[in-house]
Image (cartoon, rainbow, N blue to C red; front, side, top):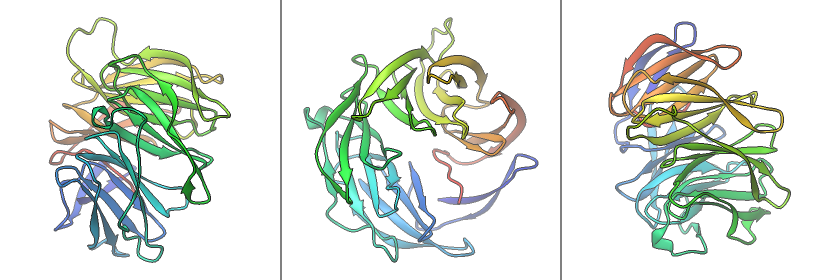
Length: 319
């Protein structure tokens, strides 16, 4: 776990410090109320919490909790910051931990949410509460589906409910909710498609349209990684590992998408990227660098030439 400073004027990074005693992290979350950083430790099959000092000078360990399955790859805080949901890629499980209100520490004995299918065949890859906080959604790459669990009064009240199913083998990976609340956008790892979805009143998702994230003439090997929408909800961005590019889609008023741009990511294996003001920062895992792009007012990306070397970057989060 490392702390970087970012100059918004120049698009440049600087390493401020490394936090000793933190694991090799694959995903990260931050609770501003308790100044707690949560991390996944995939190989150790656990999630951990660290208290950030007010001056960011230290990250004090608050303990770990086992996730009950292999490869916890994604974590998300509940809207009120009282729970932490985890996606276990090793099966279909989504353990949800209660958090200590004062310290942010993880409590033992999570609520474990599962699919209605063979558990071992699942690969939970993403989870998040709905914008209204009345459902917890999960994306399962192994079962090719998005499902949800009704949530009220701090407890889960039913489920699982299948919200949307992709074609077999598409491998849904990550989903992003539209800031307006009416739509959602699903990115598949194997098919490398983006599907625009309309959110129905009952929590299910209805396809609007689906487009490839790769150029039509591309014949090589590539897998989808990350998806993020701009704050205005007018552009969706995705990263392509193998083709090594960022593809953007314009979002229309009816939620449908159209291809906007495909641009080289400036490195190898763009596992993650972060929209930060007028910049988009790509974390290229295999070339071990962060590459900064300028974002125009219409969402178009342009290379800045700014590259910061960093060992195996896989996740970024502003604090």
